[in-house]
Image (cartoon, rainbow, N blue to C red):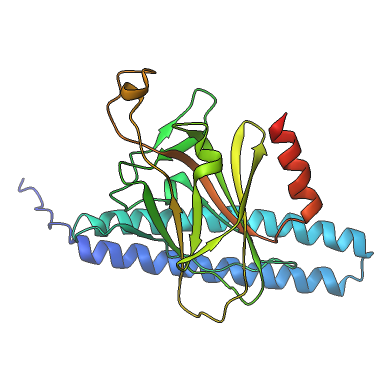
Length: 254
């Protein structure tokens, strides 16, 4: 019997199909969230119960949105194989609004596409991270709603040198912003507040290090790759209060 000859896969059409399904999923997530919030409000439940349910729903929808964003990251990775990469990590995502504020998380798996980010790694405890590469500067581009001040927390698995916690700088759209350094469990955290802005395009966040080193140079291993900090996650949300930041700094200093 003659065998059926399979048609070659068109990568461009495949990407278009994935993009269409992904956009439909994002639309459905938003619609589900709106319907559930309306029904909760119509039920006239006590405020504490309503807030708890809405927060739980927002958390679940946020997890679904993260999966959608991972698909977008895969699309970008496939596209980067067909086009030259640039030094700026341009991360497309839909800005999701909870009932209180923006809450956006970009994990190490989503921070792809930059020549100055090393391949993703995982610790024995399952913490995923990417080391920044030989260039002491790394720039990310995020689609953010800056109509109000926005908190930014960069969670780091490690630093190639401990003193980088005091020496690194953070620039937002080319302007230096102050940061505090603390702990979140076993991870280091760089805390910043992004000031309000009328800018409608993406926000550029640059992390500037004094230098980069290889573990081989520092005598800690035979790894000869130049690196700076190991990024686990970049989180945007409601700015922390001054008291919260102070307590975290005191905890870190212990």
